[in-house]
Length: 169
Image (tube, rainbow, N blue to C red; front, side):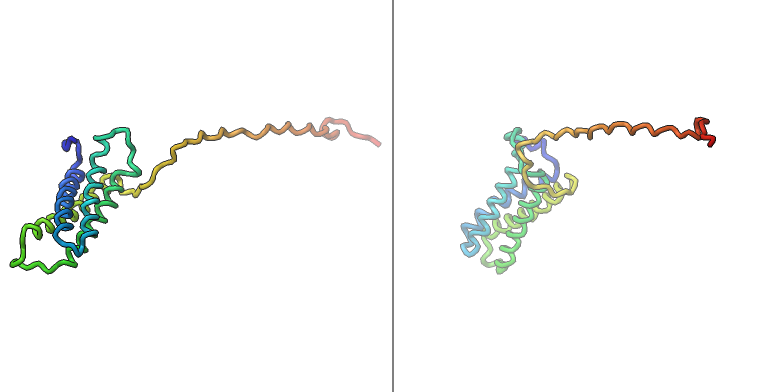
């Protein structure tokens, strides 16, 4: 995994994903009240790492959508979940502040950094939301068959006045 091939938003999302993974894992172990949500934040950090490094690990694998769009979904969901967990556990005091609390704050900050970097990657990719797989079977286009040619119109009988033949009766 070569980080020098990553763009600046991808590199920032990488740092945020690692911080979210570490902080979410510690928070899941330390705060049993929010066990599921913080584990989901850690899993989303892993998903962001997979999105970032999939083209390097397996170049033939096609992601199910635009890379920036996938990063946006994962980053925003992780950022919102960890921010909600932080706001519901906002009872930190400096008396009970320990290493678990510090790592939890690192995880929250990492999720917010991941969301911001995902937004930057989404904007750098053109800002078009594209998620979903294209169909695997490509149907060849049906050639357009031109309509059958119409026969030329029948020649109208010549008018006798034009030819100079006139009845003199």
